[in-house]
Amino acid sequence: MEDGQYVDGSIWFYAPNKGAPVFFAIAFAISGGVHFWQAMHYQSWRFTGLYFFCSLLFVAGFIVRALGAFDYTKLIYYVVSTCLIYAAPPLYELCNYYVLGRVLYFVPYHSPIHPGRVLTTFAAISTIIETLSGIGAAYQAIRTLPADLQQTGQTLLKVALILQLVVVCLFLTLAATFHSRCRRNGINHAKINQALLTLYISSAIITARCIYRTVEFFDISSVNFSSPDVDFSTLNPIIRHEWFFYVFEALLMLCNSILLNVRHPRRWLPKSTKVYLARDGVTEITGPGYKQERNFLATLLDPFDVYGMIKGKDQKSRFWDDSDVAGKAESANAMVRRDEE
Image 1 (cartoon, rainbow, N blue to C red):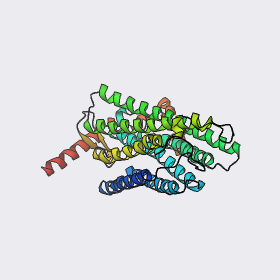
Image 2 (cartoon, helix red, strand yellow; image 1 turned 90 degrees about the horizontal axis):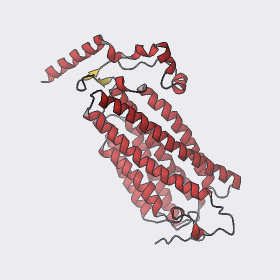
Image 3 (cartoon, rainbow, N blue to C red; image 1 turned 180 degrees about the horizontal axis):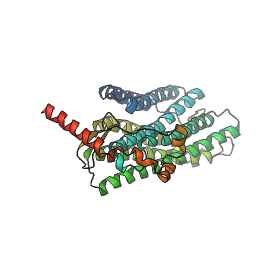
């Protein structure tokens, strides 16, 4: 049982629990197996394949942590497990961006942004955050590096964690704005509400984890571990007690993975981005879908297409306002329904 005291020679500060990482490795493996089956069942590898990959990262991370628990003096176990476990949460956020984009495709006329730009914009930011997290975790974990490089690693991690919080807030603002527009215009479809509810819960879980990591690293960065005068008993309990990690990192992320098993987005969202909800809030129409006429750089730098709105070019992409297209699609859908009956 850990008592919050420094264990001599331990890279982790404490003597890591031997059973907990085994449990979480098995739990994430089971959840990942379900994600694999769901991706096959719903044929949604492009849509939700990252769920399975995130589970693999956690499984690998906790296996290495279990090895470190039996030899807590080896630096390599600490470095590898830290990097693997830190890599997955930003990818869960990336999955949420993709899901929101698919929700916006489903109700394109109330979307504050081109649905495809949700992924490109937030993915670019996530790539930066992931890079900062990876480099920062490696620099911070390798205690044999010069002090200035360790300090750089801590700074990069703090920046990455703060950026994660900012991006989550922006993401939730975008989702809430869209949701509010739908409600104000009489769109109260179960598929939209259920998919967004899953996003809200997942984002709340990831935010709680991010807050914990931010507090932890700001405390770690304020301590000079190389000083002979450092008093380990005065350190923040988050640093001294391992259970904080298992509650606010491992358990929260496992809950998020299970949430996405139980409330898989493809239960509500159509397979094709060309299927959208008519303005009556009931009929689902297969339309022509969005056509991306701007290059990737323009999309990345101007996700809201401000230039297009000024020039009036954004009107051309509003296929849902084309009565001919909508009429033909509704007639085709009606014929299919009659045939099925």
